[in-house]
Length: 236
Ligand SMILES: C[S@@+](CC[C@H](N)C(=O)[O-])C[C@H]1O[C@@H](n2cnc3c(N)ncnc32)[C@H](O)[C@@H]1O
Figure (tube, rainbow, N blue to C red):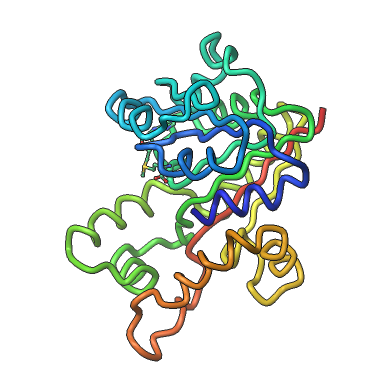
């Protein structure tokens, strides 16, 4: 998963403990467990937790708990300890109390630790039909309807900025919100090149897969950014 590699590249230090905040069936955890000494996943849905546990046969270095993002602040969440890196992929729109969720995950980071989340960006004036068709080229009407729901539930740029500022007022963290590109950096920029270079062995094969995304010849990328990226760094 590209988001795992972006997180590992951006954290800026060796990652000993990684948390997947909403691990689903454990895809990211399984990949992370091959690279990171200790991985932990949480998800509030029992069937997802069961699937992830079955997927991760790595023993004591892997743990999956039935918890939501917000519940990371509860005593059960606190028993997980702290992490160098926490990741959240395609979930944030589902979180009932996003401010409480971000404060809870901030509390689970060690000093200097990083939380990286990415999800679909909702345009300020969201008009579902042209947006979803142009941005994602859904293969059928079911996929189209799913994407309309996902974008509608997600955040606009202004909402994310306001949320980041609210978190910074409540916790010792620095929040940065970006859009598009690789982890929010224009693919031709020096920052994106450094990001790829930091994880070249893992990232280059993933980026090659994106080059051939099945788009019709000459379709080109959408004329606007479709993903947001949020970096939350714990300062103390
Ligand atoms: C679209 S799936 C993404 C799963 C995984 N992150 C991935 O990229 O494959 C959404 C997941 O978010 C979980 N979820 C829903 N609400 C949540 C919350 N408040 N905190 C954490 N996870 C949540 C769901 O149970 C589901 O597994």
